[in-house]
Image (cartoon, rainbow, N blue to C red; front, side, top):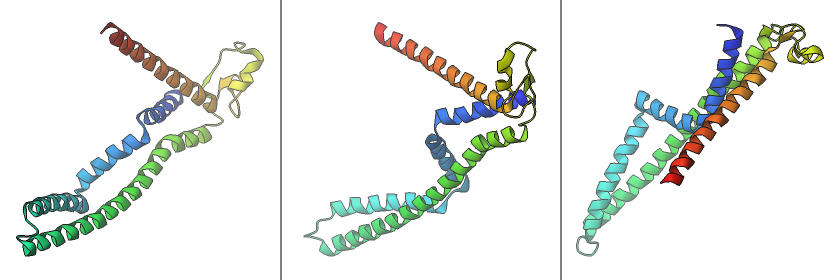
Length: 187
């Protein structure tokens, strides 16, 4: 794959992650992770919740005055279940926090980190050459910082790609926004 397309795809993927949002991606990835790993803690949490709800339902049906022994036993069971659930929720939150750190690191490496590496690795290589004399004395800026004179550098190409992708996003948002406003006005 050519350097030109590779850089464009990297910039596009980075912007796509930005548009979707890391939080949304994290929630989707964590849900997928839980399904794939069949987390015992998550399964236990679900079972404990349903058990607590069933016991609490029975507790509400039991009279504290008429059947005190049964009511007290159910009450202790609910309290113990809630304490266990709180402890389990704490473990799951800790696990999710750890997953979040790893996921966010992976996203950064796969988007921003790869762009830095590509920019550094190909810093002296031109993405493409410009026809001679098109930009006159400003042609050196397009080759900034290390590409040969008369060419476009990786850094400049990344900036141009990002600008085009962001502009494309704005156009799509404007088009969908106008169509939604039009539907809203005509209704």
